[in-house]
Image (cartoon, rainbow, N blue to C red; front, side):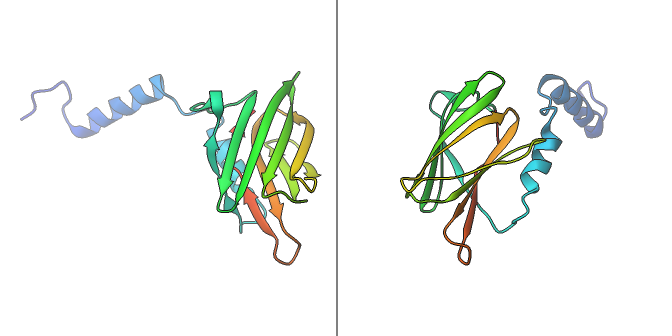
Length: 153
């Protein structure tokens, strides 16, 4: 017995799908974000979790503010400052050490630096876009790779 406006479940689901696409569509760059996240050459990575975003909690994109990422025994804290069309990233690694840091931005060349012995690093002129930070912890033979989730700058 059908007492509703829809003759069958398929019609109802199609109409629901249309409404979701109209009122809450996926981000236009979703496919690019997924491809970017999967494009890491070194697939043996640990993915850090977004720990805290201060005033930016709950948003997909970040122009300025502090974000903290953690994975097992490593914390990566970054402070983002918008400088015109680009960004400056000031970062700190805990525990500290001279670890290589790479910032990947979709559609752009990567920016690389090495944290000082106190774990501090700075990257200037980071372009806007879908961004991940990769930290290479330790020496070459036992090197560990940690990557943050992608954020949009």
